Image 1 (cartoon, rainbow, N blue to C red):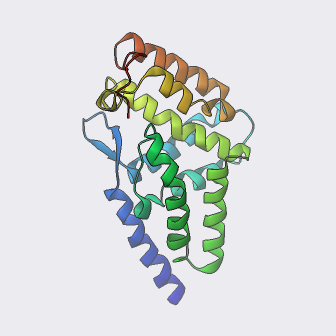
Image 2 (spheres, helix red, strand yellow):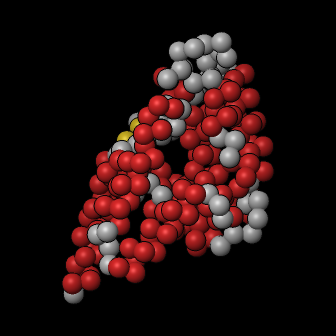
Length: 200
């Protein structure tokens, strides 16, 4: 019963992820939360696994994606194009991982932390594909919402391509699509001009 109580308490801790707002907008026009993103990107893995650069262990990819943002419960979300904040976020997230995963029973604590570390390190085929999907969805949502988040922050096409170039490592097919989406967004004026220095 103690083990079960510990697991149920952790489930309640995870509920807090629903309150972490991201910069991406849903198609309905509100900001997405991190729990919604985790679900959406896990479904993307089920749907798009055939496009991975290498064969992947899909259950492992799903596990990574469902827990990759759990640390945001403590560390918060950082906008992907905010370079200054991103430099500080890495250590905050590692500390959050220490705190949060310590709440689990020992073998689950070890397994979840290993999965999270693998995702962050991005060395395995599973991690590279998971990270590709994690980068794809905000681009897809931005194009579908007329670049709303990009426009709010003055983001340029070169920033989007540079920040999301790692998509190619997990899936060349998805990277090709990202480049097409960015070109489409640029043509429609969803991204700031390249000489605009106002991006954060």
